[in-house]
Length: 221
Image (cartoon, rainbow, N blue to C red; front, side, top):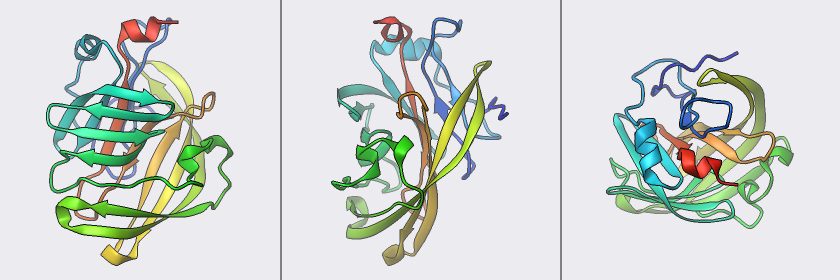
């Protein structure tokens, strides 16, 4: 079992997942996939005041709570005080306002695994996306991705243990001499990405994304 008591900024593990169910006394669930570091400063009260789903984004020492501005299926747009993120089943596909020239445009492909059911993803499946990093004046960067299923991990979520399937995304961008691995944790029941650790560029910290759901929204049928 992984005991996730603290948030952090280590490369191979980290995140916070949020939500709530009728058996918990907290306003939202938090899953933390890091092994050390400071706890999140975002509180349940702040999440509840949103009145709609939110996204907690942690990037180095920066932490921002964004509100869901729109959703169509697994495609969601999130707005913060000075940020805009677009995700497709948890994967970042466009951003504005990420510090350190970290903004990207990374559209999915027609046969992209994030357009389908990640639970049925073939081992070793490969795709090549073309991404842009506008603030760095970098365009048409080939991004090669290869997928494998990680272990099913027992995660302690606010005292409630849950089994989550990890999906590993090995990334290679030879034109900027960058190799890394992104991590996604999915709900085995729905196939939805509940948490992720995504690397944007070699000189940037990991971007940790956490969906948080207000109590009132969570209780709606």
